[in-house]
Length: 136
Image (cartoon, rainbow, N blue to C red; front, side, top):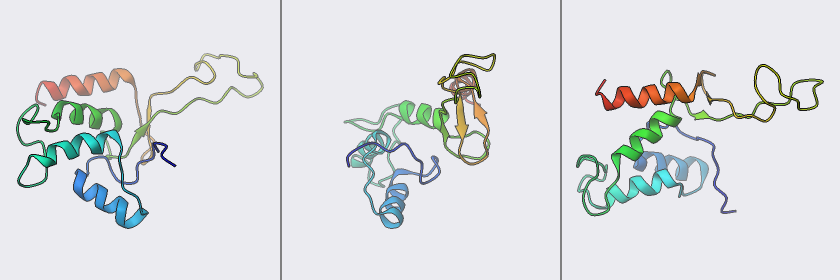
């Protein structure tokens, strides 16, 4: 109990209020992850309760939109909006954990989508951030 779970129960592009309601109603728990906490800070200062309408950072402890945008670019599949999660490579068969040309045993691979199986490398993530910053 109290341990952070890094499983996505809902698509990452769902706003904080409906996301938390779904987790509460369908899975029986209140999410207290860092992302929800950051987004909820923005909700406290907004009339409409959606948060983050005031620029890079809305005033008075509001949500930091740059943080949320980078989080989504890092962990949300650009193809299907599934969740990207790192995956550790198993040791090569018969190698006893030795490194091979595909990478070292136990090495973490790029983000792998839980929905479509696509991968996002660190370089692809950086390119997505740069495109977003350029307004594409």
